[in-house]
Structure formats: C-alpha cells, structure tokens
Length: 72
Image (cartoon, rainbow, N blue to C red; front, side, top):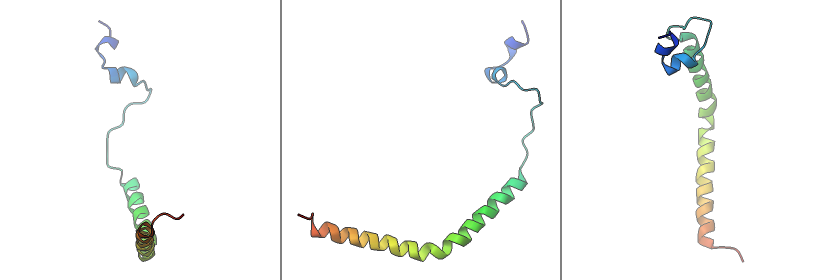
C-alpha cells in the first residue's frame, strides 16, 4: 500500500509545498474590524433621525395613497 492510499480526500486535494499553519488569534485584523465598526457607528448614528423620518413619511404616504384608491 502506498502513502497516497492512506491519505484522506481532503489531504489528496490539498497540495502545497509549504507546511500548514497553526490556528492562532489574529488580533491585528480584529482591531481593524472593530475600528471600522466604530467609524461606521459614529458616521451613521447622526443620520438615524433623518432615516426614521423618511421611513415614517413613506409609510404615511403609502397608507394615504392606498386609502385614496387607484387613479383613473
């Protein structure tokens, strides 16, 4: 029996010349992700009242348009 016969399907499909890396926490990318989230929150929170007003007005106008009926 050759060495290839004892390999699993994933090991057969995974051909590489470099050794596999161990899983470790990636704190650098984690801090970048949190920074991006905080920037988005800081930028979007001031717009929330305007978004809410536009949403409520669209619902009110949609309701009034449905009450009026189809136009001839």
